[in-house]
Length: 575
View 1 (cartoon, rainbow, N blue to C red):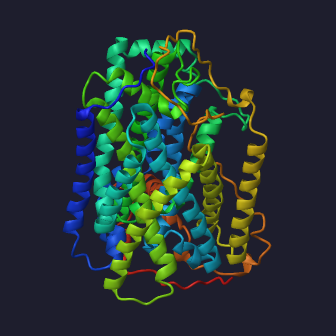
View 2 (cartoon, rainbow, N blue to C red):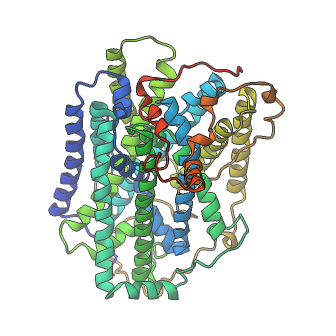
View 3 (cartoon, rainbow, N blue to C red):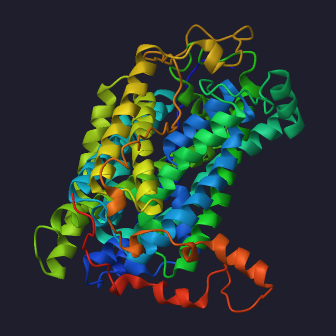
């Protein structure tokens, strides 16, 4: 394979532009349809009238970011198909979210996840959690915009800031005009484009290799089919236990407490639709992961004798998939453009999700509690906030360009932020004896513990015998000396991977007087809220009637859409 760079041709740019325009058109269409929505609540929640299928696809798209599209195949390429065990953690995390968090959040009809923390604990806890959210969301969104633009710029010559600004401009416009409904339906289109991009690469690889059996045989010989690893050492990078247990905690934090995800399933027309959206979303996540694993094995099959990363043809593993695309699809005009459109669609879905979520949190946690305004003014402010955060995201992309190993940094930030919040929300929903002091100091202690572990890992990183990257070779390389690729980004010591490292400390919950206080039962999980309770009851009673299609009793229709019965913001435990 030649080291010469392939450049995108006119057909690729046309496909790329059509995809961007299609995404914008869908968003603008729903913006026009929703032009008469009269409240900020409708703008930020879609009027709580969305169906399960659309929300499930949006849930998948919003976390199938450009980082995921580029990084996961590279992770499989370096560490093997054992990465696929994450699919088990998806199921466990969604079941936990559906059983524990969804019933409480949907019953309260909250727009901001952190609103629950003031109802359950104190305003100080709510504000601290909100700060953590903004810290995490802004850095991650900046990375999601910048990283793919950098990779495509270095592999294809596509203009770096042109890609960044076009991504931010398109999603900011339809977010600001159409709100959550425009975001969700644009996600539906973008998820299809993402899978089309993945499949174009996989199908071409299979054709060139003469069948999937050759790719699997190469992976087996190279040690990439490495599912049998049940080492219980928690310091290992990828084992069955670290992926399933660690992944469950990480994805529970995402689906159970992270504002963009909670905001989506809370926008469903009924709790049945919300629960169904979560479970359909698991299928989307599984398809995404399967595509990533197969793409990673395709990478190894093509590069087993000449690793472009070690050979200096790419500056980071995240550029391997674009590099392969430009090598095998360059003769098919338009297909490289489709793949890169898929990467940017992944960026659009994640960025628009973050913009809408940050606007909702700002409105619900900072503006509404302090200023009494008419619904018309609140709606205008909501749209203005979407525009503002779109501009901020471009600025964060600029910050990402000035920082070093941003992907690894954001992986760490995601773990530091997600773990303590998961612990706090779980305590609030499950443990009535945890009071406001215990909740706040537990969150602070959890952050301190997570930061300490992170600093320790930075100072003393895991040795190769713990990470165990698989062997890569450059013996078969035959690059021409006149290659035009010019890599300026320093080689990283480790590739990127968005993982979460939960850290929490709740030892003080019995030391702050929580046992002496009473908590409103609507803020707690009750056995009647859970799907498992009704399924067990149905089996026990041997009665097949009297329940709805997902096992919920008919009386739950009372909370099918509580949008007009917002929970009274009154706490029973004081700080």
